[in-house]
Length: 204
View 1 (cartoon, helix red, strand yellow):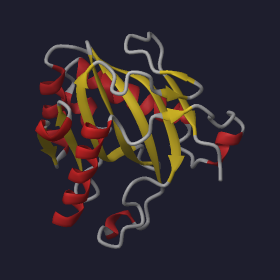
View 2 (spheres, rainbow, N blue to C red; view 1 turned 180 degrees about the vertical axis):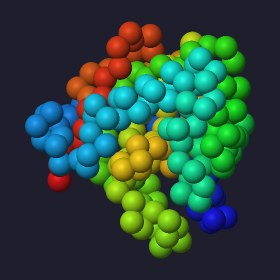
View 3 (tube, rainbow, N blue to C red; view 1 turned 90 degrees about the vertical axis):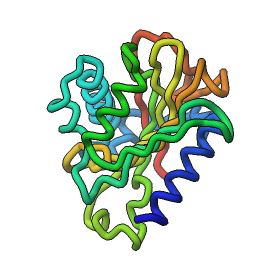
View 4 (cartoon, rainbow, N blue to C red; view 1 turned 45 degrees about the vertical axis):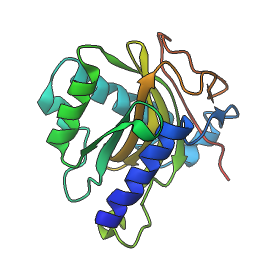
């Protein structure tokens, strides 16, 4: 577990320092082609999952929010980097309750909303022999950008497609968009976009 946490920490620091693990997702799969993704993790499913989770956090509904987060021991954690670069503040949330508290604290009265996300097969650590709890779990990985007031929160979520819960998520939070011109799903991310866009990576 310590080694996995260290790997997750390294990933979230990379997100904070590099402006995200991927900047240009401009060629999404068509809706028909996205059918290769497992049920529960197709773009519409992910849009509902993330939107439902953020909605529960925004209205302070703890019980509803926790239904979107995997229980222990499946939950690896949600790892936040607040700010950019080496001086980013770290918050590691390793229980569903801690995830909820961290999200509420980071929001600080401002509402989270999904801007864009792109879904691919196999979530982070899904085949890692050091985490056997995920061996039999059908997963997907989701690169995402959220808006929260004048800030953005970007990262990669691991989704359990059967339970439709988040089991791992490194998140970098900072002012504005970094980099300022990110492409997801055939268009640029806009911090104050009114409607979320979710698509899928093309199948291999």
